[in-house]
Image (tube, rainbow, N blue to C red; front, side):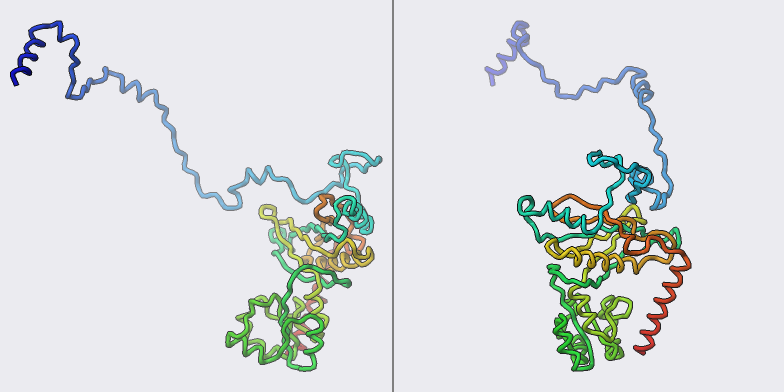
Length: 350
């Protein structure tokens, strides 16, 4: 302890040594700010007022985005017709091809010397006006099966369940493409859980078994056979061939532009005969046109033919094969005829 005290004395008595000693402050220094400093800082701050936004309806929330969106219904009737074979496409009208010309143009690009896919699928890109009878209503998305005269390999595994009470119908139904054909015993298997409806995409029934089939309406839901969808009738062979070899397509509305719908359906392969492809396409267009809403004006607005992997698309005139516009009277008459036919079929069933 003595050496420590003596060294402390030297530090106190001899100021020369004190210059090299660092003093440690154990207490915090809290010097007050000068008068008015805090007040000046408060004045510098800009007060931001938060404006409360009231309730905005869901259909007006993205109004600014909607304004910037381009109308998907293409109308180039105001553009000039090109007078030369070399021009900038966006400044002129689309060239309209015949179905045969469009098919031949795709065959040239898919030749073995180019894409080398001579048997590629050919698709119909069909644009629709989905406005319903009322201007504020729109046609719902729909799925249909179009019967075509010339079948092709569509690449789908379609499982079809067929019901009939008459045993004589079974061989014909199996030959037409029915996956499983039966009568009341199939209904019992479904009720017991031995047969799953989820294993079958389509259910077709003869009218003679409809009273027994009603117990499965809750299980089948949208799959339940009915004349309107073409799954209930007396000609089992024709119905089965339609669903096994026909063209399956879906019409989908645009998410933002509700009056614009689109169908993209394959109607054959490029190595098929041109006439066969043309008749398949006409059958597809007529099936689409059969569900047009009861209003005046166009339903199908534009048709393009495509064939991947090529990005080329050729416009055709669909109104050479279907009516372009239907008057309100004509649409009402056709609707009345359809209703009468459905009533007759339902009466025959009952």
